[in-house]
Length: 429
Ligand code: HOZ
Image (cartoon, rainbow, N blue to C red; front, side):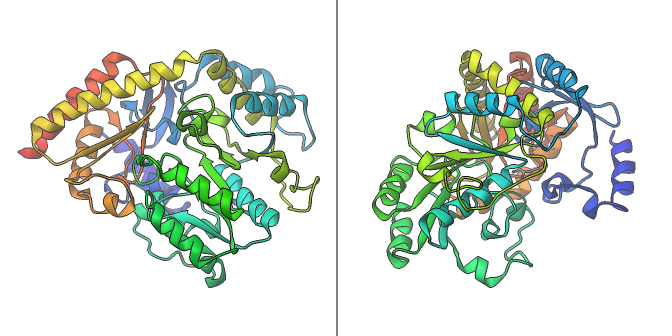
Protein backbone atom coordinates (compact mmCIF):
# COMPACT_ATOMS: atom_id res chain seq x y z
CA UNK A 1 0.00 0.00 0.00
CA UNK A 2 2.88 2.38 0.79
CA UNK A 3 5.55 0.81 -1.44
CA UNK A 4 6.53 3.94 -3.37
CA UNK A 5 6.60 6.03 -0.17
CA UNK A 6 8.87 3.40 1.40
CA UNK A 7 11.23 3.54 -1.58
CA UNK A 8 11.26 7.34 -1.52
CA UNK A 9 11.81 7.47 2.24
CA UNK A 10 14.74 5.11 1.94
CA UNK A 11 16.22 7.30 -0.80
CA UNK A 12 15.44 10.57 1.04
CA UNK A 13 17.39 9.47 4.10
CA UNK A 14 20.55 9.28 2.02
CA UNK A 15 20.49 13.02 1.21
CA UNK A 16 18.16 14.73 3.72
CA UNK A 17 18.58 14.52 7.53
CA UNK A 18 16.04 11.92 8.65
CA UNK A 19 14.57 11.97 5.15
CA UNK A 20 12.42 15.04 5.87
CA UNK A 21 12.74 18.81 5.84
CA UNK A 22 10.73 19.31 9.04
CA UNK A 23 10.91 16.76 11.87
CA UNK A 24 7.23 16.03 12.65
CA UNK A 25 6.81 14.75 9.09
CA UNK A 26 9.10 11.79 9.86
CA UNK A 27 6.33 9.88 11.72
CA UNK A 28 8.82 9.34 14.58
CA UNK A 29 6.27 9.23 17.37
CA UNK A 30 3.76 7.07 15.49
CA UNK A 31 6.24 4.87 13.63
CA UNK A 32 5.96 3.72 10.04
CA UNK A 33 6.85 5.40 6.79
CA UNK A 34 5.99 9.02 6.09
CA UNK A 35 3.77 9.39 3.05
CA UNK A 36 5.31 11.13 0.07
CA UNK A 37 2.64 13.32 -1.48
CA UNK A 38 2.29 13.76 -5.22
CA UNK A 39 -0.64 16.13 -5.45
CA UNK A 40 -3.67 17.47 -3.67
CA UNK A 41 -7.01 18.90 -4.67
CA UNK A 42 -9.74 20.27 -2.41
CA UNK A 43 -9.88 18.18 0.76
CA UNK A 44 -7.83 15.29 -0.64
CA UNK A 45 -4.19 14.29 -0.76
CA UNK A 46 -2.77 11.71 -3.18
CA UNK A 47 0.44 9.91 -2.26
CA UNK A 48 3.19 8.46 -4.43
CA UNK A 49 1.36 5.09 -4.49
CA UNK A 50 -1.82 6.72 -5.77
CA UNK A 51 -3.65 6.35 -2.42
CA UNK A 52 -6.23 9.05 -1.69
CA UNK A 53 -6.62 10.58 1.77
CA UNK A 54 -9.01 13.01 3.42
CA UNK A 55 -6.61 15.66 4.68
CA UNK A 56 -6.94 16.96 8.26
CA UNK A 57 -3.56 18.70 8.29
CA UNK A 58 -4.13 21.24 5.50
CA UNK A 59 -0.36 21.84 5.34
CA UNK A 60 -0.54 22.49 9.12
CA UNK A 61 -3.14 25.19 8.60
CA UNK A 62 -2.60 27.24 5.45
CA UNK A 63 -4.95 25.40 3.07
CA UNK A 64 -8.08 26.69 4.74
CA UNK A 65 -9.92 26.91 1.41
CA UNK A 66 -8.79 23.43 0.34
CA UNK A 67 -5.87 22.50 -1.89
CA UNK A 68 -5.28 24.01 -5.32
CA UNK A 69 -8.13 26.48 -4.98
CA UNK A 70 -8.77 27.67 -8.53
CA UNK A 71 -8.60 31.42 -7.85
CA UNK A 72 -5.38 31.07 -5.87
CA UNK A 73 -3.74 28.87 -8.51
CA UNK A 74 -4.74 31.25 -11.31
CA UNK A 75 -3.45 34.29 -9.41
CA UNK A 76 -0.06 32.58 -8.91
CA UNK A 77 0.13 31.56 -12.59
CA UNK A 78 -0.74 35.06 -13.78
CA UNK A 79 1.89 36.61 -11.53
CA UNK A 80 4.71 34.14 -12.17
CA UNK A 81 5.13 35.16 -15.82
CA UNK A 82 6.41 38.57 -14.68
CA UNK A 83 9.33 37.05 -12.69
CA UNK A 84 9.35 35.38 -9.30
CA UNK A 85 11.31 37.94 -7.28
CA UNK A 86 12.55 41.54 -7.56
CA UNK A 87 14.04 42.38 -4.16
CA UNK A 88 12.33 45.76 -4.53
CA UNK A 89 8.98 47.16 -3.38
CA UNK A 90 5.76 46.39 -5.27
CA UNK A 91 2.24 47.81 -5.18
CA UNK A 92 0.98 44.36 -4.22
CA UNK A 93 2.81 44.59 -0.88
CA UNK A 94 0.88 47.77 -0.06
CA UNK A 95 -2.39 46.09 -1.04
CA UNK A 96 -1.50 43.11 1.17
CA UNK A 97 -0.67 45.36 4.13
CA UNK A 98 -3.88 47.35 3.66
CA UNK A 99 -5.93 44.16 3.44
CA UNK A 100 -4.43 42.78 6.65
CA UNK A 101 -4.93 46.07 8.47
CA UNK A 102 -8.58 46.11 7.34
CA UNK A 103 -9.12 42.59 8.76
CA UNK A 104 -6.97 42.31 11.91
CA UNK A 105 -7.49 44.35 15.08
CA UNK A 106 -4.63 46.36 16.58
CA UNK A 107 -2.46 46.28 13.48
CA UNK A 108 -1.37 49.78 12.42
CA UNK A 109 1.78 48.64 10.64
CA UNK A 110 2.72 45.19 9.33
CA UNK A 111 6.04 43.78 8.12
CA UNK A 112 6.07 40.76 5.82
CA UNK A 113 8.61 37.96 6.36
CA UNK A 114 8.93 34.44 4.95
CA UNK A 115 7.88 32.18 7.86
CA UNK A 116 6.19 32.08 11.22
CA UNK A 117 9.59 31.49 12.83
CA UNK A 118 10.90 34.75 11.41
CA UNK A 119 7.74 36.56 12.47
CA UNK A 120 8.02 35.45 16.12
CA UNK A 121 11.79 35.97 16.27
CA UNK A 122 11.41 39.49 14.92
CA UNK A 123 8.48 40.35 17.19
CA UNK A 124 10.49 39.31 20.23
CA UNK A 125 13.50 41.36 19.13
CA UNK A 126 11.21 44.34 18.59
CA UNK A 127 9.63 43.93 22.04
CA UNK A 128 13.11 43.86 23.56
CA UNK A 129 14.28 46.86 21.55
CA UNK A 130 11.14 48.80 22.42
CA UNK A 131 11.16 48.11 26.16
CA UNK A 132 14.94 47.92 26.68
CA UNK A 133 14.42 44.67 28.64
CA UNK A 134 15.79 41.19 27.89
CA UNK A 135 13.68 38.45 29.45
CA UNK A 136 10.37 37.15 28.17
CA UNK A 137 7.78 34.59 29.21
CA UNK A 138 6.59 31.74 27.03
CA UNK A 139 4.38 28.81 27.97
CA UNK A 140 5.40 25.16 28.23
CA UNK A 141 4.25 23.32 25.12
CA UNK A 142 3.72 26.48 23.08
CA UNK A 143 5.78 26.57 19.91
CA UNK A 144 6.81 29.83 18.30
CA UNK A 145 9.10 28.52 15.58
CA UNK A 146 12.65 27.36 15.86
CA UNK A 147 14.53 30.55 16.79
CA UNK A 148 16.90 29.88 19.71
CA UNK A 149 14.94 31.82 22.33
CA UNK A 150 11.78 29.81 21.81
CA UNK A 151 13.21 26.30 21.92
CA UNK A 152 12.87 26.03 25.66
CA UNK A 153 10.08 23.68 26.76
CA UNK A 154 8.66 23.93 23.25
CA UNK A 155 5.76 22.00 21.80
CA UNK A 156 5.31 20.60 18.29
CA UNK A 157 8.31 18.58 17.02
CA UNK A 158 10.39 19.29 20.14
CA UNK A 159 7.68 17.64 22.24
CA UNK A 160 7.03 14.93 19.64
CA UNK A 161 10.70 13.91 19.69
CA UNK A 162 10.80 14.39 23.48
CA UNK A 163 13.86 16.66 23.32
CA UNK A 164 14.37 18.02 26.84
CA UNK A 165 17.19 20.46 26.06
CA UNK A 166 17.99 21.49 22.51
CA UNK A 167 21.76 21.37 21.95
CA UNK A 168 23.13 24.56 20.41
CA UNK A 169 21.03 26.94 22.50
CA UNK A 170 23.40 28.93 24.71
CA UNK A 171 22.77 29.18 28.46
CA UNK A 172 22.51 32.96 28.11
CA UNK A 173 19.66 32.67 25.64
CA UNK A 174 17.91 29.97 27.68
CA UNK A 175 18.23 32.03 30.87
CA UNK A 176 16.34 34.91 29.29
CA UNK A 177 13.46 32.55 28.42
CA UNK A 178 11.13 32.16 31.39
CA UNK A 179 8.49 29.46 31.20
CA UNK A 180 5.40 28.40 33.06
CA UNK A 181 2.33 26.26 32.49
CA UNK A 182 -0.32 27.38 30.00
CA UNK A 183 -3.55 28.46 31.68
CA UNK A 184 -1.77 29.15 34.98
CA UNK A 185 -2.21 32.86 35.61
CA UNK A 186 -0.80 32.67 39.13
CA UNK A 187 2.46 31.27 37.75
CA UNK A 188 2.67 34.22 35.34
CA UNK A 189 2.07 36.68 38.19
CA UNK A 190 4.82 34.98 40.20
CA UNK A 191 7.35 35.09 37.36
CA UNK A 192 6.60 38.73 36.69
CA UNK A 193 7.00 39.58 40.39
CA UNK A 194 10.29 37.65 40.62
CA UNK A 195 11.65 39.41 37.54
CA UNK A 196 10.35 42.91 38.17
CA UNK A 197 11.22 45.37 35.38
CA UNK A 198 13.14 42.70 33.46
CA UNK A 199 10.44 41.22 31.25
CA UNK A 200 10.09 42.62 27.74
CA UNK A 201 7.31 40.39 26.47
CA UNK A 202 4.85 37.61 27.13
CA UNK A 203 4.21 35.52 24.02
CA UNK A 204 1.34 33.10 23.81
CA UNK A 205 -0.55 30.95 21.36
CA UNK A 206 -4.01 32.34 22.16
CA UNK A 207 -5.44 28.94 21.22
CA UNK A 208 -2.69 26.34 21.29
CA UNK A 209 -2.09 24.08 18.35
CA UNK A 210 1.33 22.69 19.18
CA UNK A 211 0.43 20.36 22.06
CA UNK A 212 -2.73 19.26 20.36
CA UNK A 213 -5.48 21.84 20.47
CA UNK A 214 -5.73 23.49 23.90
CA UNK A 215 -8.12 26.29 24.75
CA UNK A 216 -7.36 29.25 26.99
CA UNK A 217 -9.40 29.02 30.18
CA UNK A 218 -11.64 32.00 30.97
CA UNK A 219 -9.60 34.80 32.54
CA UNK A 220 -6.17 33.49 31.52
CA UNK A 221 -5.49 35.77 28.55
CA UNK A 222 -7.48 38.62 30.11
CA UNK A 223 -5.28 38.33 33.21
CA UNK A 224 -2.09 38.46 31.16
CA UNK A 225 -3.40 41.52 29.34
CA UNK A 226 -3.82 43.30 32.69
CA UNK A 227 -0.35 42.30 33.86
CA UNK A 228 1.22 43.54 30.62
CA UNK A 229 -0.56 46.90 30.91
CA UNK A 230 0.55 47.33 34.50
CA UNK A 231 4.17 46.25 34.03
CA UNK A 232 4.96 47.76 30.61
CA UNK A 233 5.31 44.31 29.04
CA UNK A 234 4.58 43.75 25.35
CA UNK A 235 1.80 41.17 24.91
CA UNK A 236 2.53 39.14 21.78
CA UNK A 237 -0.17 36.93 20.26
CA UNK A 238 1.41 34.21 18.15
CA UNK A 239 -1.36 33.87 15.59
CA UNK A 240 0.68 31.84 13.14
CA UNK A 241 -1.93 29.08 13.44
CA UNK A 242 -5.00 31.03 14.54
CA UNK A 243 -4.59 34.14 12.36
CA UNK A 244 -7.23 34.34 9.60
CA UNK A 245 -8.27 30.80 10.62
CA UNK A 246 -10.44 31.35 13.67
CA UNK A 247 -12.06 34.47 12.22
CA UNK A 248 -11.19 37.32 9.85
CA UNK A 249 -9.50 39.04 12.80
CA UNK A 250 -8.02 35.82 14.18
CA UNK A 251 -7.97 34.94 17.87
CA UNK A 252 -7.82 38.59 18.91
CA UNK A 253 -11.25 39.15 17.40
CA UNK A 254 -12.72 35.77 18.32
CA UNK A 255 -11.62 36.01 21.97
CA UNK A 256 -12.03 39.79 22.17
CA UNK A 257 -8.55 40.39 23.59
CA UNK A 258 -6.15 43.02 22.31
CA UNK A 259 -2.52 42.16 21.68
CA UNK A 260 0.31 44.67 21.34
CA UNK A 261 2.10 42.70 18.65
CA UNK A 262 0.72 39.87 16.54
CA UNK A 263 2.56 37.30 14.45
CA UNK A 264 1.12 35.55 11.42
CA UNK A 265 2.06 32.68 9.13
CA UNK A 266 0.33 29.71 7.47
CA UNK A 267 -3.06 31.06 6.16
CA UNK A 268 -1.55 34.47 5.40
CA UNK A 269 0.52 32.87 2.62
CA UNK A 270 -2.19 30.68 1.10
CA UNK A 271 0.34 27.83 1.03
CA UNK A 272 3.40 29.89 0.08
CA UNK A 273 6.22 30.71 2.55
CA UNK A 274 4.89 33.85 4.23
CA UNK A 275 4.89 35.22 7.74
CA UNK A 276 4.23 38.66 9.14
CA UNK A 277 4.39 40.61 12.36
CA UNK A 278 2.48 43.74 13.11
CA UNK A 279 0.95 45.85 15.80
CA UNK A 280 0.61 49.26 17.23
CA UNK A 281 2.44 52.08 15.49
CA UNK A 282 4.08 53.15 18.73
CA UNK A 283 5.93 49.81 18.84
CA UNK A 284 6.25 49.03 15.12
CA UNK A 285 7.93 52.36 14.37
CA UNK A 286 11.06 51.03 16.09
CA UNK A 287 11.62 48.58 13.21
CA UNK A 288 14.28 49.52 10.63
CA UNK A 289 14.35 51.65 8.55
CA UNK A 290 11.99 53.74 10.76
CA UNK A 291 13.91 52.77 13.89
CA UNK A 292 17.04 50.83 14.76
CA UNK A 293 15.58 47.39 15.54
CA UNK A 294 16.98 45.68 12.48
CA UNK A 295 15.06 43.09 10.51
CA UNK A 296 15.28 42.28 6.79
CA UNK A 297 14.74 39.63 4.10
CA UNK A 298 15.52 39.24 0.40
CA UNK A 299 12.35 37.25 -0.19
CA UNK A 300 10.16 39.31 2.17
CA UNK A 301 7.08 40.48 0.27
CA UNK A 302 7.94 38.13 -2.59
CA UNK A 303 5.37 38.72 -5.36
CA UNK A 304 4.33 35.09 -5.82
CA UNK A 305 3.97 34.55 -2.08
CA UNK A 306 2.06 37.83 -1.77
CA UNK A 307 -0.43 37.04 -4.52
CA UNK A 308 -1.17 33.60 -3.04
CA UNK A 309 -1.70 35.12 0.40
CA UNK A 310 -3.58 38.17 -0.86
CA UNK A 311 -5.98 36.06 -2.95
CA UNK A 312 -6.64 33.72 -0.03
CA UNK A 313 -7.24 36.54 2.45
CA UNK A 314 -9.48 38.42 -0.01
CA UNK A 315 -11.66 35.33 -0.46
CA UNK A 316 -11.87 35.02 3.33
CA UNK A 317 -12.68 38.71 3.72
CA UNK A 318 -15.39 38.68 1.03
CA UNK A 319 -16.96 35.46 2.31
CA UNK A 320 -17.25 35.75 6.07
CA UNK A 321 -19.66 32.79 6.02
CA UNK A 322 -16.64 30.50 5.40
CA UNK A 323 -15.81 30.78 9.12
CA UNK A 324 -19.32 29.73 10.12
CA UNK A 325 -19.24 26.85 7.65
CA UNK A 326 -15.87 25.70 8.92
CA UNK A 327 -16.94 25.89 12.53
CA UNK A 328 -20.18 24.03 11.80
CA UNK A 329 -18.23 21.28 10.04
CA UNK A 330 -15.76 21.03 12.92
CA UNK A 331 -18.52 20.82 15.52
CA UNK A 332 -20.31 18.18 13.43
CA UNK A 333 -17.09 16.16 13.30
CA UNK A 334 -16.41 16.69 17.01
CA UNK A 335 -19.89 15.52 17.98
CA UNK A 336 -19.69 12.48 15.71
CA UNK A 337 -16.25 11.50 17.02
CA UNK A 338 -17.43 12.08 20.55
CA UNK A 339 -20.32 9.64 20.06
CA UNK A 340 -18.23 6.77 18.69
CA UNK A 341 -15.40 7.35 21.16
CA UNK A 342 -17.81 7.30 24.10
CA UNK A 343 -19.18 3.98 22.87
CA UNK A 344 -15.65 2.54 22.69
CA UNK A 345 -15.06 3.14 26.43
CA UNK A 346 -11.49 4.30 25.67
CA UNK A 347 -10.75 7.41 27.79
CA UNK A 348 -10.46 10.45 25.53
CA UNK A 349 -10.69 14.22 25.44
CA UNK A 350 -11.64 16.20 22.36
CA UNK A 351 -10.63 19.86 22.42
CA UNK A 352 -12.10 22.01 19.67
CA UNK A 353 -12.10 25.70 18.87
CA UNK A 354 -13.26 27.08 15.53
CA UNK A 355 -11.77 24.84 12.85
CA UNK A 356 -9.06 23.42 15.15
CA UNK A 357 -9.57 20.13 16.96
CA UNK A 358 -7.60 17.32 18.54
CA UNK A 359 -8.12 14.06 20.37
CA UNK A 360 -6.02 13.17 23.40
CA UNK A 361 -6.48 9.66 24.76
CA UNK A 362 -6.69 10.67 28.37
CA UNK A 363 -8.98 10.39 31.39
CA UNK A 364 -8.30 13.97 32.51
CA UNK A 365 -8.94 17.40 31.01
CA UNK A 366 -6.19 18.71 28.70
CA UNK A 367 -5.41 22.29 29.67
CA UNK A 368 -1.62 22.44 29.54
CA UNK A 369 1.48 20.61 28.36
CA UNK A 370 1.73 18.21 31.32
CA UNK A 371 -1.88 17.16 30.71
CA UNK A 372 -1.11 16.53 27.04
CA UNK A 373 2.16 14.74 27.72
CA UNK A 374 0.52 12.32 30.17
CA UNK A 375 -2.10 11.18 27.62
CA UNK A 376 -1.77 7.67 26.18
CA UNK A 377 0.47 7.89 23.11
CA UNK A 378 0.24 4.14 22.53
CA UNK A 379 -3.48 4.45 21.82
CA UNK A 380 -2.89 7.53 19.66
CA UNK A 381 -0.38 5.61 17.57
CA UNK A 382 -2.81 2.76 16.93
CA UNK A 383 -5.62 5.18 16.12
CA UNK A 384 -3.39 7.17 13.75
CA UNK A 385 -2.39 4.09 11.74
CA UNK A 386 -5.87 2.57 11.71
CA UNK A 387 -7.19 5.85 10.30
CA UNK A 388 -4.37 6.16 7.78
CA UNK A 389 -5.14 2.69 6.44
CA UNK A 390 -8.72 3.88 5.87
CA UNK A 391 -7.62 6.93 3.91
CA UNK A 392 -7.66 9.57 6.65
CA UNK A 393 -4.53 11.71 7.00
CA UNK A 394 -4.24 12.99 10.59
CA UNK A 395 -1.28 14.83 12.14
CA UNK A 396 1.31 12.13 12.96
CA UNK A 397 1.68 13.36 16.54
CA UNK A 398 -0.69 13.93 19.45
CA UNK A 399 1.13 17.23 20.00
CA UNK A 400 -0.40 18.75 16.87
CA UNK A 401 -3.85 20.12 16.09
CA UNK A 402 -6.07 18.97 13.25
CA UNK A 403 -6.93 21.77 10.83
CA UNK A 404 -10.14 21.56 8.85
CA UNK A 405 -10.43 23.03 5.37
CA UNK A 406 -13.60 24.30 3.79
CA UNK A 407 -13.51 21.85 0.88
CA UNK A 408 -14.45 19.05 3.29
CA UNK A 409 -17.94 17.75 2.64
CA UNK A 410 -20.47 16.23 5.03
CA UNK A 411 -19.74 12.91 3.29
CA UNK A 412 -16.02 13.28 4.17
CA UNK A 413 -16.90 14.03 7.78
CA UNK A 414 -19.34 11.10 8.01
CA UNK A 415 -16.72 8.81 6.52
CA UNK A 416 -14.16 10.06 9.08
CA UNK A 417 -16.58 9.31 11.92
CA UNK A 418 -17.31 5.84 10.53
CA UNK A 419 -13.58 5.19 10.05
CA UNK A 420 -13.03 6.16 13.68
CA UNK A 421 -15.73 3.74 14.82
CA UNK A 422 -14.15 0.92 12.79
CA UNK A 423 -10.64 1.84 13.96
CA UNK A 424 -11.71 1.75 17.60
CA UNK A 425 -13.28 -1.68 17.08
CA UNK A 426 -10.09 -2.99 15.47
CA UNK A 427 -8.04 -1.50 18.33
CA UNK A 428 -10.17 -3.36 20.88
CA UNK A 429 -9.65 -6.74 19.13
N1 HOZ B 1 5.88 22.77 13.12
C1 HOZ B 1 4.80 22.39 12.29
C2 HOZ B 1 3.59 21.98 13.04
N2 HOZ B 1 3.36 22.60 14.26
C3 HOZ B 1 5.15 21.27 11.37
C4 HOZ B 1 5.64 21.82 10.11
C5 HOZ B 1 5.84 20.77 9.04
O1 HOZ B 1 6.34 19.70 9.30
O2 HOZ B 1 5.49 21.06 7.92
